[in-house]
Structures are given as structure tokens and as C-alpha cells.
Image (tube, rainbow, N blue to C red):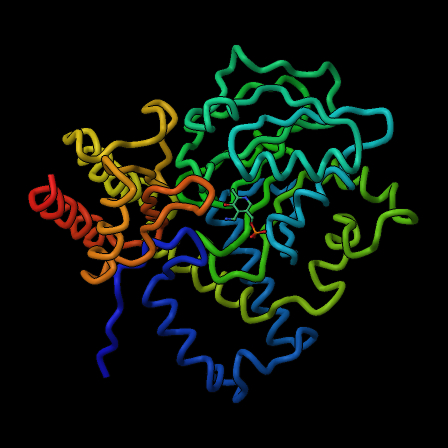
Length: 365
Ligand code: PMP
């Protein structure tokens, strides 16, 4: 049976690689050699333990994760990390620095302020987050507990290509929308977190990579922090303190194998750069389409743009959807258009969008 699949530009949950869906479909009835669906196995079974161990090993291989980092699979989305990061890492009397570079960063700041003292090291909110703060604008705190950044701003379509220099403080990054879209030097971070539903798998899991020495801060809070919110407890229990989303972890494992089969993050990055370059070239070619992010801050994952009027934008989205180009509507808070082109989004879909844009402009422009 041939199933019709559209080009899905959703910002997340987003497209998964077709071979991953096919394998999951097969294992949905019975895992080979197990005779049970992947949805039916106990999280305490040896089958699941080996799925979890292999997924962790493949995450380590894909991200070249150094041995002194723990790999955690947690629940509650990246939004839960907005709370867990300060609850675990921000002690009384200390200050955490936050780079306010997008709507998700703003949410992270809001939660951190409930926990402790926050210094907003720089903000581009007054410019609608159309660019990233520059290094010279950062006002960092001496001896900060950590510095929090968002590596890719999913809503505004901006992303870091070089990491900010933050001195001795551990760098903590929300990498939800660009994790494993290109090589990552994990050793530059104290902690990295990412909701899975863009580049890593389905929703339901947040991948956390945490440097072991930072777990000491969590271990010291075992009697006060809710158990489910404690990184040290999750690390000691190898993400099996309670029942994890077993199916999501299994699919993340398949996605890791897919990334490795592509040639790893260098190969994935090359494809992502090609895809983004094609779309940005189209935005720069025409005055009809206007990219909303400052050129130097452009994201390779979420390409945001506007048309001359909101009326035209509505017509564009309607016609694009009819042409099999789905999910192009920008986030409700900013409007306009957003093409999310994560790892699994095919280059042919970008070509299809570019040719649709030309046709639409010729008709309307
Ligand atoms: N941070 C970023 C950068 C995101 O893009 C998102 C979701 N789109 C979130 C945090 C929130 O993630 P979740 O819905 O998994 O809590």
C-alpha cells in the first residue's frame, strides 16, 4: 500500500525519517525474537534494558559525549527543564545568568526567577528577538552558578553558530530545536537539554546531558528537592526511577541509528546547511518575501519570513497546504511563516517550497 505523505514543515513534533517509521511500524506488532509489541514490554524487562542501554550508547556515539557526562531521559518536556535546571543548580545566595534571546528563553527566565536569583545577562526582547545578543553585550556575573542560553530560537528563527564565551561558569543550553542537527562539542557545556520532538524522536522525552561534577549539587538537595526533579536520582537510577515513556525511547534509538547511517552529524549538518541555504537564497532573491531574522543570527532549523500583507500570508498558507506543503504557519505569537527543516525533512521538500514560492509570487506579486 502506498501512503501519501505531505512535506511537513511543523516546528515539532516534526517529521521523522521514513525508515524509522517503517521499523517502528513493524515492531509495533512484535519485536523480532520477543513476540511482544514494543508498546507492551515492561520497562524492567531485559529487552527494554537493552533498548535503553543501546539508545544511550548511540546517543553517546552520535554526540561524541565525553565519559564524564551522564545521559538522562527525562519527562516533562524542555519546559520541565526550565524548572529543574535552577532547582538543581542554583543554590541559595548564588546568581544564575540568563541570555534572553527568544520567547523560550523568556519562559526559562520566568521559571528560574521562582527558584532563585537571576541576572538577565543580555536581552534582545525590545527588538522582538530578531537577533542574538552579541558577545560584547553580555553582562555576566562573577562566580555565576551557571549561564543559560537557548542555542536555537524555534519561534523567531535565530540560532547560535558560535557559542558565547562565559568564562568559568558552566554553560547550560536549551538545545531543543537544534540538538544533533550538527556536531556539538558537549565538553563546552555543563548541561544540555532538548525535548525530543524535533530532531531526536517523538514527543515524551527530554534528553539531558549533564557533567558529573554538577550532579553533586543535586545530590546535596536529596532531602529537599522532589525526587522526580532531582538529576542525581535520575542518574543513579539510569532514567528508570519510575516508568519512562518506553516507546519514545525506543524510537529515539532508531533515530540515532538513522543519524549514524547518514554518516553522523557531519553529514547531517552538510545536508541541513544546503537546505537552509536554498531557502534563505530565495528570501534574499526577492523583496516579496522578507526574512525576519538578522542575517548573522539566522537559524538553520527554522526559517521565518513574511509576505507584504497578512492577507497574502493567509492566502500563501492556504495554497501551500493544498499543494502538500503543510505546517508553514508561524508561531501564533509572531505570525508570518515558518519553515521548520529539521534533520528528517527532505531536501526535495525544500525544493518544492522554493518552486511554490516562485509560482505564488508570480501570481500575486
Ligand atoms: N525550548 C525550545 C527552544 C522549544 O522550541 C520548545 C518547544 N517548541 C520548548 C523549549 C518547550 O518544549 P516542550 O514543549 O517540550 O516543553
